[in-house]
Image (cartoon, rainbow, N blue to C red; front, top):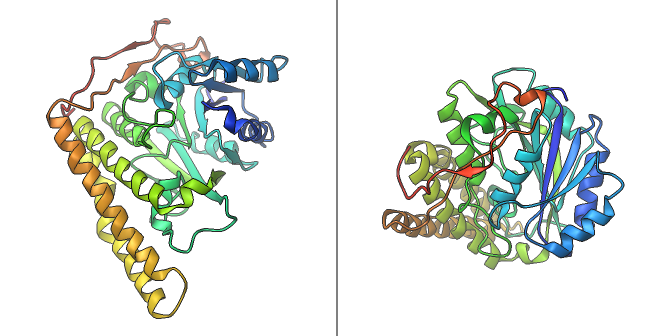
Length: 352
């Protein structure tokens, strides 16, 4: 395969999303720039593994079904996909999202510059109710895994890409290791995140000249189920983000770990509150609710961050960064021969 061939990894964990999984795979098949392969990584669900194996048993060249080879959770599933990928670029798509036709084409264009190590895209919410709740601020669309108001438009350099709509050179993982386990989501447990943020910062520390981009022409549409349109989920997810950010800050340092968040909290969010209050004064629906949700979201995230920082200092919240084996492809030919996946010692709060 060429060093610009793209392997797409879709991590899956529940049969409840069966139709969504099939739709995600179908959207990859319809790309204007074809993927070299699609890897479905099943997270410790034997029934789903068997069912998907039967679904794609005659399509093993284009779609491969794999079992998560690591601990339960999204990070280990992604690492399993990375280790098995044959392409020089590895792209990630959420299992409840569909990609627009030119998604991979715009990703590939970014890698024309050899300094580019990662390219992300724009994720649009597909609300179960058919429309955005009046109270739900666009500045907090990251709560439902989507691109939020405040990110710059166009193709721009960023600190980190967003994991559900992202791609990396395979060599990026050779340099920095894989996604840290113990930070991100684990099945139906608390909705943690930030594993892609930690990886991207670690990547630029390992490769200081690396360029990371977001190209908002690389669009996917991400389903937002009814339960995630409720304020209870909003608050819980914001709190979990604070917990995750504390781990990231302890891993890579607060300066880098909170660099983008400072601008977001001092500029983007106050402007959002002001817009909400103005809309309320003008009698527009949801204005006061949006302003209140921003304040509540900041408070929840701050509370999670404080508690997460205390736990980290006391030795809790350990996580591991795996060293990934390279698939035998031309893209990894310069890397020393295949080695079994292993893990570095657990990180317990030290700054690197």
